[in-house]
Image (cartoon, rainbow, N blue to C red; front, side):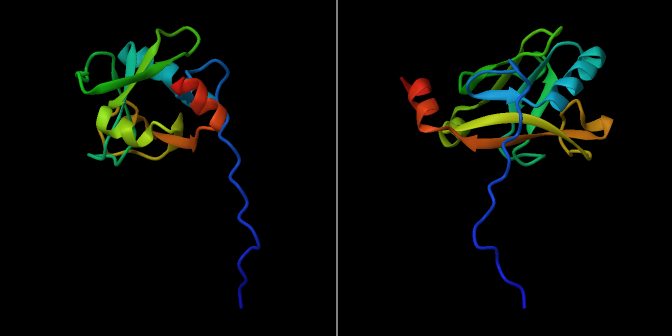
Length: 143
C-alpha cells in the first residue's frame, strides 16, 4: 500500500540569468548560451509565445523580423544576453490576458520541438517556466 506525502514539496524556482530580462520575462543561463549559438547562425533573434499551434504553447524563436508582429501583439520586453542585440519577446493580446499574472522564464531542454523555431534542428527546444507574480510584483507592474 502506498501513501501520499503529507504535503506537496514546492518546486524550486528556476534561476534567471542576472539582468537577462524584464519584470515579465527572463532567461535561464542555458537559454542565454543557446541564443548566442543561434545568433551566430541566424543573426539577431526574437521570440513570439505560441498560442497553441504546432508546438503547443512553446516560445518560438525566429530571426528578428521573420515573424510579423501585429497590432494585437504585446511586447513583454527585451531579453538581454551579453554581446547580443536585445531580443524582443511578444505574445498575442488575447493570450496575454490569461498570462498577465505570470513571470515567464525562457529555458531550453534536450529534445526536438515540432514547430518552426530556429533551435529545432539543433536537438533542443525552448520552453517556458512560469510562476505567479507576488503581490508586490503585481502592484509594481500594475501601478
